[in-house]
Image 1 (cartoon, rainbow, N blue to C red):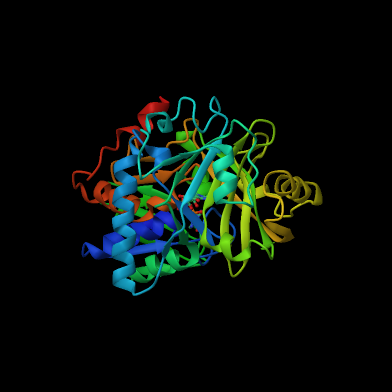
Image 2: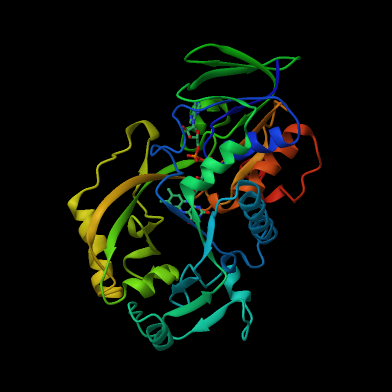
Length: 372
Ligand SMILES: Cc1cc2nc3c(=O)[nH]c(=O)nc-3n(C[C@H](O)[C@H](O)[C@H](O)COP(=O)(O)OP(=O)(O)OC[C@H]3O[C@@H](n4cnc5c(N)ncnc54)[C@H](O)[C@@H]3O)c2cc1C
C-alpha cells in the first residue's frame, strides 16, 4: 500500500506529489492526460506572479513563500522558470481592480508599487493608450513564469512516485485502513488521498455539491509589432480593467508571440465535458478591437488561440481543506484564475494536511466551512 495517492497531476496535484516525495513518502498519482496538456487550467506558455493585488489579504504571505519556492525549484533543477518583467494593474479608480481591493492600502511613494497617471503610462510604455483617469500601479518586481517548464520541473521533483498518466480515476472510497482508487486500468490502495482535479473536481466529489463554476477562457497570441517589439519583450505585463469591455491582460512576448486574453467574463460558464474548444472569429475580433483601441501598434493580428479553463469559487478564494467527513482525504480546488503562481506553496500546504503537520500558513480563508 502506498502512503499517499494523488488524483490529478496538473499544477497543484503535481506539486503535492513532489512535496510528499521530498518528505520521504511513497506516492501513487493519476492523471487523465499527460501533463502538461491543453485540456485543463495549466497550459499555454506563461503565468504571472505579482503581489500588489494581494496586499493586506491572506495571500500576501503565500505569494512571498511562492517566490522563495520558485527560487528553490530553479536552484534544484538548474532551469530558469521565472523572469522579472514587471506588471501594470490598471483600471478606473472606482472599479474592481482598485475600489474595495487590497490595492487601496498601497502607500505612495513606494518603490515596490509605483502609481502612474495615464500620461506617465504612455511616456514609459508608448504602446499603451489608457483613457484619462485610468489609475495604474506598476509593480516592477512582478514576474512571468514559464508554465510548461514549471510543470516539467515539478513532476521531475516527484521522481520516485508511481505516476500514472492517461489513467483517469473513475471512483474512490475510504475505509478504516485507507483509501482505494479505481481507475480505467486497475485498483490501487493508499493510506490517504489528495484530490486536485481542477475543473473535474465536482465529478470526484459529487456529494459535496461544491460551489464551483467552470469558465471557458481564451488565450491569444499575436505577433509583436516592429516598432515596439524589443521594448515589449522587456515587459511589463498588464491586467487592465475597462468599464465596458471587462478586464483584459497581456504578457510580454515569448517565442510564441505576445499573449493576451480576457480575465473573468460573465456568461462563459460551461460544463467541463462540453467545453467549446473552438475559438470563433467574433471573439478574436473583440480581442483585436481591444488592441486597436488600447494598445495600438503593439501587435499584429492574432496568430493562434487556445481555450483554457478557470474553476471559480463564489469568493474567488481557493478550497484547500480536508474532506468534511473523511479525514483521510484532502482537497484542492477552485484555483479561480490565480493559483498557478502559488504552486510550490500549495503543494506544501496539501502535504501538511495529508501528513497531519501543522500547516505552515493559516488555511481558514480556504476552508470548506465558508460555504456551509
Ligand atoms: C487562461 C488562464 C490564465 C491564467 N493565468 C494565471 C496567472 O497569470 N497566474 C496565476 O497564478 N494563475 C493563473 N491561472 C490559473 C492557474 O493556471 C490555475 O489556477 C491552476 O492551473 C489550477 O491548477 P489545478 O491543479 O487546480 O488544475 P489543473 O492544472 O487543470 O490540473 C488538474 C488535473 O487533474 C487531472 N484530472 C482531472 N480529473 C481527473 C481524474 N478523474 N483522474 C485523474 N486525473 C484527473 C486533469 O487532467 C489535470 O491535469 C490562469 C488560468 C487560465 C485558464
